[in-house]
Image (cartoon, rainbow, N blue to C red):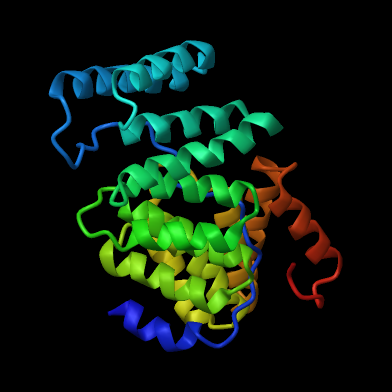
Length: 275
């Protein structure tokens, strides 16, 4: 119900600072089942080798993971998850040469299995890292529209944040509202929408979402970004007591954070707009 109230308010040119953080992206899951009837023994070997590679990647033992994936390819050179995992491995290693190679492995995984949503989500994260945002949008949209895919909400969150990178606040707002329609507990959607509403000076609606966000993070500690949002809301409502309390908490708990720097800049010139 809240989403339907917010939608017309969010589609009128929001302003907010994009973030590079993507979530629900690179995954080491290798449970995708092949879509044809290739030899089950070779498929099983490829699946086991790929799962072992995922474990080594988690421990950053990339050379060992590489060897496991080569054995997966030797067992079944059409096992899509192995190509996706190799893309993840090369991306994690991070050198220019390996980042270039990763692209082809993600593409191969998708070519082998066009319904491999996790590979599309992983590829989207890679494309976003490479600042190929329009291409990333296409991959996240496919993964985020795949009903039944367990990473669908994460893909939609990634899609919304990628739209922010493209400075398309209207599209980002629509996506984050889609997220809340499917999963009311999405912390990312709440936080991003609070910023979008604040930038539009929709203070009451932003406060509603912010209050929900505080409930979601209860017991986990409050991040500097949430503290700054609370300060902005308090300032917009002329609540000096809350503003001062939150400002003190931000400056004492996170003195070196970007949010603390923004706060100090604003305190030196309260008439200036937030950046």
